[in-house]
Image (cartoon, rainbow, N blue to C red; front, side):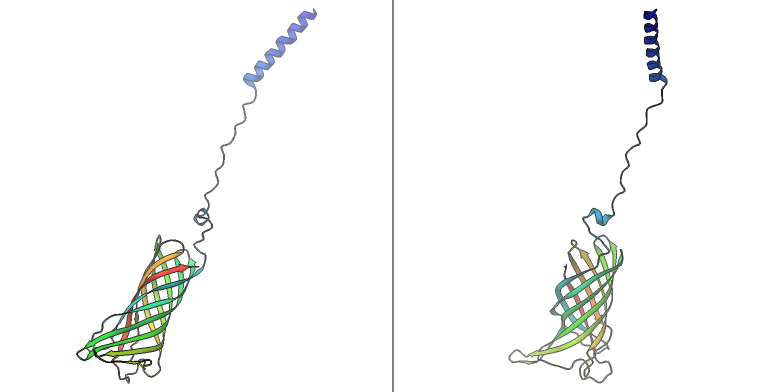
Length: 231
């Protein structure tokens, strides 16, 4: 009798285990792993933020001459000069920034006559107030006004034998030394810290603003090319 009971218990336990294996609850499904959302582009690039303001230093060359405000029928040659100063890049949105600058800029022109060579070199403080449009990766368009203050002018006349030079000259109509310019240009971001830029600027006002100066009425124009270095 005991053997029968023991055998019956073993059979029942075996059948229960088999039923549990076949008809028990289904195995728990493990959900697929969640992938984190990609970080913003500026985080992927090592803390670079395209909306971060920056300032820097720039230096370049000027190729300047003058154009007649009225049809006086004279032409001038180009004069090579220097521009150097500070700039800021203040993003408004990711594609547009305000880009003010303060520059020392050399401008002027050369005139050749049958009597010799006349050179006028003027020294300006220029304050461009530009809008910077980021139209493509690493490519920008610059556009806006510029305020220019004439500090001094040097005239040199070389007749082939004698050079006469004056350190000051009233070429700005009796003390009117402030001019409004128009500027248009482009810049290429070589990397995050250095850019290559070129632009064209021209006086919107002539030198003979009131018609009583003894020099021809002309407007300075200048082509600029240079490098900018962000701090």
